[in-house]
Length: 412
Image 1: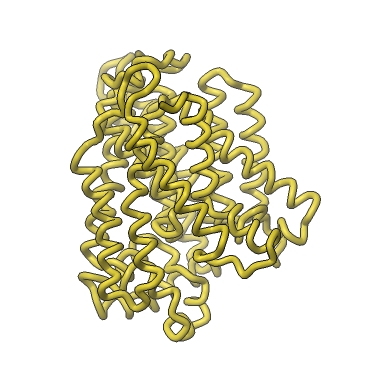
Image 2: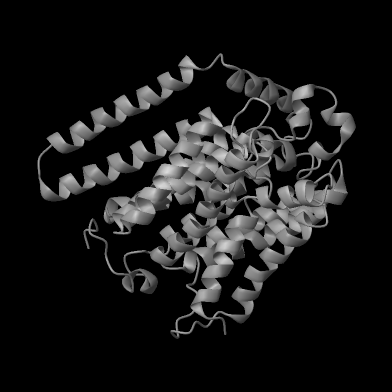
């Protein structure tokens, strides 16, 4: 039986490993190796960490308190595991079966990792996540300050311990959300410190996509929780009407912000990549070309220099490329469930906790629109599964939630 501190430590370790950055840093800077997914550090650490979560599910279903892991929604778990199973099955038609098989098998187990994370109480999850993401941000800032040749990219944007700024920026944004949660939960010193360092780091990355996703997450979640709480305190049509107007203005502002930068290199290059990938998707629209196989074939990515960046820069085209329409449907079940579940949670229980999970989910989903976060055994995919499982576990009645002390902003 595993004690609570060990479970929390496993959660923090899992999140660090699934950001990928430290693994490649050790291989490339520490061991002077090329740093690939099949490298001597990267693959064993990813497989080992996922197996550790599987072990917790198999052998540690009985907690110290006497409560078992909650029973997950069967449809959600089937869709999440089914996505990995379809990825593994795609080895039969993959353009490069060797990487497809082992990555697909690992993806079958990732939902169990998400289950372990989702089962933690809100405070324990956020504590573990704060340790994980906060440490990564601190180490990255240290590299920027004391080893700038490694911490900065060729454009002097901050990338820290990660391979590029687009890997570092989302980590900063998640740390920023965790900082807000820590403040709302009464841990002001930790929260303010995390907000300051993650906010500065996010500015240093120069990432446009992460900022847009963060603004959408903050605006959307705050608007919903604020509106629902006002409606519970006051009656009449003015509150929902004002919320609708505010929401419309916010949506218009987000669209206008993207449109104003539509011709910048970030979006121009993405549109070009999407067009190139679209030609390949048309060859096998139902089954795809094999999970992650396309990016490992030099002849295929050599057709255009932008393809050599290793991803479609968007989870939807990425899934259609590798797993076709079948894979996209399985992925969409989980993602839509996460969005619908956290919206439902925030509407029925407008609190600091439901706000955090809604904001986190919205951020992860928007990031998926411009980055292939369905790949790379990413924390993004795992956290989306965790959000879906947690939010559809009837959080108002969950023993884990009942055991928590309500925050100052909670309504129950």
